[in-house]
Amino acid sequence: MSYSQPIIKGDKHTKMLPQGTALVLEGGGTRGFYSAGVFEAFMDAGIIFPYIVGVSAGAANAISYISGQKLRSRVIIEKYVGDHRYVSRRDLLRHRTLFGYDFIFETVPTRHVFFDRENFDSVDITFLTGAMDCATGKTVWFEKNEISDGFTVTRASCSVPLIAKIVKHNGLELLDGGVSDPIPIEKSIEDGNDFHVIVLTRNQGYRKEAFKFGWLVKLFYKKYPQLIEAMLKRHVTYNRQLALCEELERDNKALIIRPLKPISVDRASADVNKLLALYDEGHVEGAQIVSMLEKYFTTI
Image 1 (cartoon, rainbow, N blue to C red):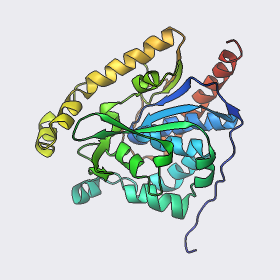
Image 2 (image 1 turned 90 degrees about the horizontal axis):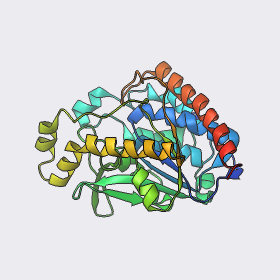
Image 3 (image 1 turned 180 degrees about the vertical axis):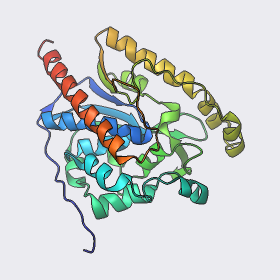
């Protein structure tokens, strides 16, 4: 073996939260490393949710959490996010993709930072990854057992329009699930959950504004009118789902975890120091939520 492969063996989760408890995950590109820090706190406590639903980077980072691989995401930030093969604006011009998905989902898990597939497969939970069907503009949900080697459905969920190529899978053309279901709280409710832990990657008070480059979406995706519509109303969808999350929290039916201050990195940041700080912030704030969860579930 000519490459260095850190072996981060997955640990078994020791505490399954009660049925009806959901973990709901927003995306956000490399901002999603905040969520990965939150998951680190969950792994420290040994807790796992019976139901996890996520889109884009939220769903991607949850994979290491489910496999129980402590510090795996942090090692990836330290060693690989700054690599031009991970994210490169030059590749956006050359190859029409900002993120190097072959590197992220094939090279890193198999050659650099081992992914514990056996442990991932052994965890008996519902895990849903959402991607947008370009033909309908609606979300298609993929089960845990559909996440195969190569992570095709995860790639699809992370493939943001204009900065990534359409992913073809099982006869579907797919893009970022964060367009059609940016905070998949409605899916969690629809599936019968009654308490939701929601991990956001924006600070309190944030509201999404209308997309400024609608003309470019119309130019690139003129064959996909429903995709265009979903992109143009994404801010409406996001703000509606965010309002629902906040209403649930006021009604003691949810806990929201989110950065305490505005994040200083964008979705394609490769600033290793800033991303490590964001990860560590998520770890600290996740630990506080663990304490709240333990208190909540001993009083019901």
